[in-house]
Amino acid sequence: MVKKEMIAMLLAGGQGSRLGVFTSKVAKPAVAFGGKYRIIDFPLSNCINSGVDTVGVLTQYQPLRLNTHIGIGIPWDLDRNIGGVTVLPPYEKSVNSEWYTGTANAIYQNLDYMESYNPEYVLILSGDHIYKMDYEVMLDFHKQNGAEVTIAVMPVPMEEAKRFGIMITDKDRRITDFEEKPENPRSNLASMGIYIFNWKTLKEALLTNASQPGLDFGKHIIPYCHGKGAPLYAYEFNGYWKDVGTLSSYWEANMELIDIVPEFNLYEEYWKIYTKSEILPPQYLSSDSIVERSIIGEGSEIYGQVYNSVIGCGVTVGEGTVIRDSIIMNETRIGSHCELHKAIVAENTVIEDDVRLGIGEEAENETDPHIYNSGIVAVGEKSFIPQGVTVGKNSVVFGVTSTQDYAEGSLPSGKTLIKAGDKQ
Image (cartoon, rainbow, N blue to C red):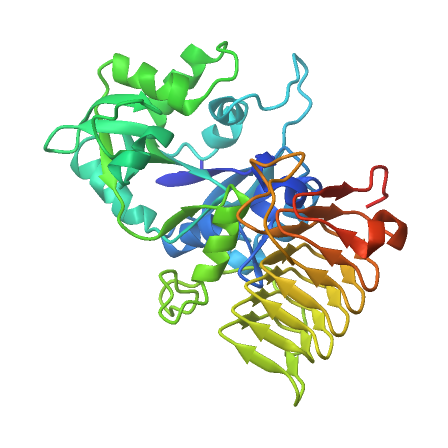
């Protein structure tokens, strides 16, 4: 029987509803990031850089693009005969088939997969954070302390602590108590949703709690282990870590990549970020183009001006067009003499000539102000914006739109234009 010291289970089934139109056709971990990557590339690269060569990726919501992206794991050097990367969707069983209903339920449904490697330790990861972390160092900490469960934590400002699961520890970092989103936090150590379990501990906890509805690590498994008196420890992480769950945090994380001294560096030799790359020609910048402080993906052609932006692969920017503080995803075509301010434009979109995005005063979004805010204009994938229209801030366009959809050629700030029934 194969024996692996530690295998990883990567939870990548999330819908990511706070990313609005950007996750209506694709799972959050498959959303493009940083010009050429997808969000899931970061935890997968962390695995291979940490020497973890067996990864189960648990998919559920809109898994097609994620499955295609991961394939058999070649870009991450995870195409192994023994181990490697395995995509684990919910599957038909002979008795009560069900979707994954909670983070721990998803793991529970894959007990057989884990059992087949008979690991000593299981690393549980989430597929939607941007960070670099050496899981081997965390495993060493786990072993040194004789822990049964180690939870990665990150110090957060005290005033933000009420948004997280908070761990209270003694001086040796042993967890004495924890609180889920407490009103009056007693500590500022926030759980990162990264766990190392002894396999025996995890298996027993999952089997005992299997019937809990929406079986979840934070709500059920961790409290169960703690209640039994299992040694739980908090491993403190002080590097860069970003949950890109909202449009504004997604926009910020992309913008931080192009800081003069980026807090999160994609160019470090010793900690590479691997991804599936298309075979594309180099980017082309015309003699009239101006590019400042931006990432330009392979195969893109820039004839206009790009400032402080992240441009994906295979993007065309027409002459006389000015793009500022924006994220343009792969294979999008932007015509000439356009203006884009703080726009996020998804893949395979066509924006015709003389279009202006992100113009005018801010107004609250009429349908989903909790999603579309911070002055960002959102354009969903495979959308079409006709020539000469103006779109305001905190607004969203999704689908193949025509001139008739824009009263007097404009979509004011805070408006939502989603063409229902489009064959996206």
